Length: 171
Ligand SMILES: Cc1cc2nc3c(=O)[nH]c(=O)nc-3n(C[C@H](O)[C@H](O)[C@H](O)COP(=O)(O)O)c2cc1C
Image (cartoon, rainbow, N blue to C red; front, side):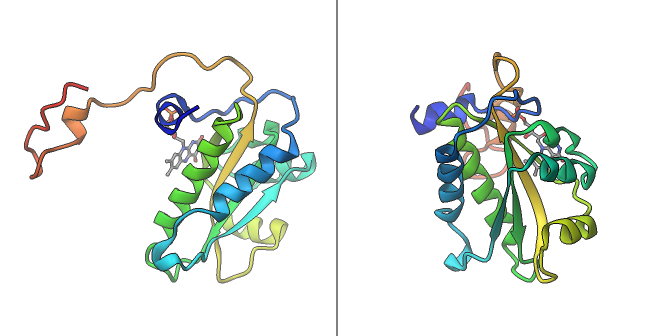
């Protein structure tokens, strides 16, 4: 799958089958995180791979918007340093890299940000200077992914040269 095709077809998935994800895919996902760009290349993020069934259920318990993570094959907690002004951008870039690397191997993923921080710190040993910012869950999709993404047209979200100027592309 080339990069453009991956971007076009990747959907956020919340239903995963019980088929185990091979460790080489997990390694590729963690490498994609490590290789991500960060502001001034500070690489302040830290990533926690969660793969035990009990731990995935704990992630679900500790979340307000990711209860579905309990059925994932594995998940990655992305921890960032809120003292860095660009930490959320850094997190987003790492997340997208991981999701695309997984999708390249047929493994789907979804994210959640409804995180009970105190519970995450307690259950996953996250130090006080880092925030558990976002979790990415991975696994084989429970149903075949069909249909197109639901997105606004380019003419509504993108402009030429100046805010509001039509960009002139139909799609
Ligand atoms: C910053 C951010 C936060 C999100 N938080 C959640 C979340 O807490 N729970 C959830 O189920 N999905 C969450 N999502 C997933 C979005 O709902 C999803 O990416 C969006 O609906 C587009 O999905 P699609 O690419 O499958 O069309 C989040 C996505 C982003 C980018």
